[in-house]
Image 1 (cartoon, one colour):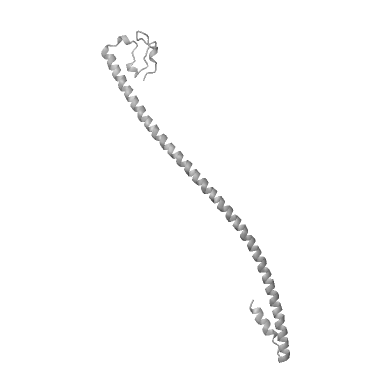
Image 2: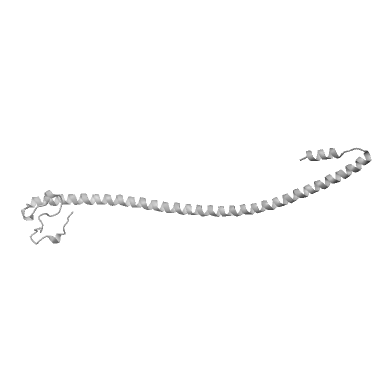
Length: 163
């Protein structure tokens, strides 16, 4: 491949520099007039072969670069798709987390209400139990007076054994 434009040659074909800048150094000659037609023909053939080889190398290089570019483009597209997929998954997970947190708060409130009701129910049950025990003592006292026996110990033992 030429390093100098053709316009730098003079009308006689002389080069302003000592070397032509074309091809390997063994082909560079100081003056084109010193070449025989066969030598010029040989040099042109060698230059054509070198030119063809360089074109083939560039063609292969371009094909390899095109393949790499296509691979890189496909990889980039895949990365974009994966990022979008993960962003959607992340958004859905956040939404589920928020919904579950909200549901958790509602369940906590409901549990507190039930605890309050349960405590009230237990208190009512205790009061009823106390009333029942008092009633049983009265019944037992009445029966004891009628029967002349002490049954209170029996009822107390039975009641406390249930706990």
